[in-house]
Image (cartoon, rainbow, N blue to C red; front, side):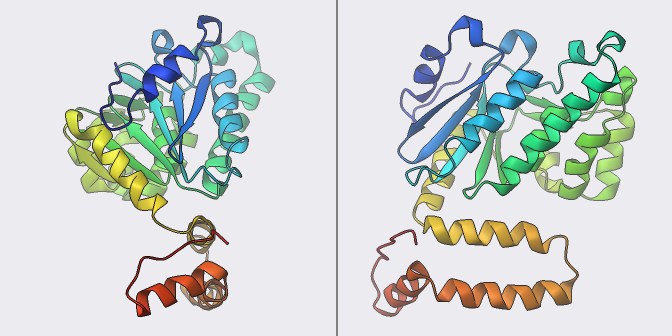
Length: 279
């Protein structure tokens, strides 16, 4: 069960706004500049059904241009963050066209996370498996409890975690990724931190405090500068190093020409806190 001392009443609000008939969706609430997205289908282990993926995507798209939203936090109800795709949607009776629709929707959701102008943080307290592991590996940051675990067990069910492996292999070294993909065995939180799959690991009672600290650090920056930086960060990952530095020099030059870029330099020189206009 989710509990929060540092984000008071957030999860109570999310659950209150979650009619039983909509338990296959994620829900959204914004508080103090943080857009909270909750996966709340504990009975189905928060599986990424078409409806669930569509709702996560829409919650980001509908709120990412709201200037008061400075970051998103994706959380989940229950001991499983997400068990991955809903296998009931992958039965032979559904047919190849429907299966392709499921995997395309997942790729579309991931692209929305990557292109969001503000950081997307996964708050994990439990198991993130298969496409659930793909989801957290695609977020900008992952903060998890020390009792969390991560796995890509698809081969055990006759469907190799090929698309989850795309995100995982881009986050962690090949040897660790192949261990996860070929054995299906989970790795624990500390191993995930060492491998680079997660950003921070804390005791469960400190999880919300750590997430809040990360959000506050983001909120202290210019929204427009963060958006510019996130866009180039992912763009340069696919570039050769010479092209990346050439483009990066221009991006930093453009950054300094912005209102907030100029304010940041002035505030440093004048030894005062910056007054961001988020432009």
